[in-house]
Image (cartoon, rainbow, N blue to C red; front, side, top):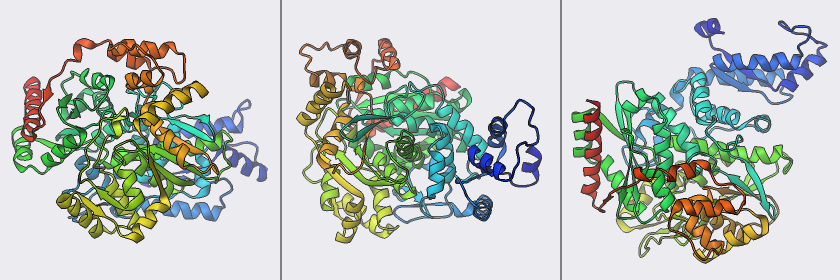
Length: 598
């Protein structure tokens, strides 16, 4: 195989083992080269796969029963794609593009120079029905590998390196071996459990993969500072993900996360402030998430700051927020995987549709479900679930995005306490068929007037994809209690928001997959209140022990309990809500890092 790679292109014909055996039987072949007397055809075919996966340049995913002509066409298409990496470039949603931008550029830059978000120039990859069926019997990491190969050109990340990255990201660090399992809840509703990683939220699924991709793609001689705004779960996941890099990569990559002091749960705060390593740090801000996000965006266009970091420390700014394209790709994987799991479990016949209901704040998670649908997953309706900060629900119903007079309200579901949803911009670009002038005008209007309104024809297209609803704080807590009473299962407040909206909007004609974005233990006070505990200690560790004593599903993560025992590391200072104060935090952090290195 090594000789083949040195002299040509190694094409992996990924054919189902059962399909190969059936074809061999039709050809009356009962032995193959290398087969011993006590070894079956199936055993030797499966044994050989490890070598193919290690060496191939490009994969051809063959469907069961594909004809030789169909496979030949796929091979030609795969070889053409492999040889022509120049076609897989990215553009800004606002259209001001200079030169060719590739995946490796996008993951490093994060935000486009004109303030827009990067999207693929030639649209999203597609899967045929027969290719989708092949994924049904695969494991989560195997599905991830296949799907990510469609989004990432091998010139950016070769398949062998991508395999190593996937194996590191989705290895033994998950509490459930299935990574993102789908569990039956009630009334034709299924829960996609996205909280089995160490930080107990869906963000971990992206932020185990993204740091590995980032470290691979950046030039070896460059150093980067990633700035992150978090409404709760992103912070601990990004700090954990980048802290898990090799020591060499930690010298090149540092992370500074800003979070609202009063806008997240105490456990979320403890998860972030426990990191005292030299390359990652969390800073509390006496404001809300939207302020943190705006401040970071301003820093990217602050020539004085970026020049200072570049000249004095050879460091460039980038971001790991969901505006980074690489953050979205793992989310496409788990939404796709949920469908394949339902087929594998016999809940669906392949091709039958599902609805997907997602608690939504920054629009990244639900956008990934849109991408999965466009790729070929039979998702019928996407249900956007909001809490009392329901600007997205209002927009999806009326076509008007209006920030005027809105005040961000704190809720029991803080990760979706967001008024300015960044990834909505990517969806508007997609649904308008790449009309970057429209997107640019809408967001220019939003900056000037705090509102925009999409044309009626565009709203009709949006509503073909989406249903939307919101729930009150009282409904959220009541649902946690009622589901626990009926099913012995505890929802976190974000998942409860989605459950309320799904109950209201689902029509019962197909299963609804509710994205469970966090473990309930991260929001212990709200959950204990919902479950009618009258006396609740202020100690988060004691709160988790109370929840654990219920013996309900899903069980409490040991990693959460362990993190709370490190109280000596969790003291932190609060930064005032002043843009210059945040800049000072950035400068001090990078100066301290380099002083320790020197």
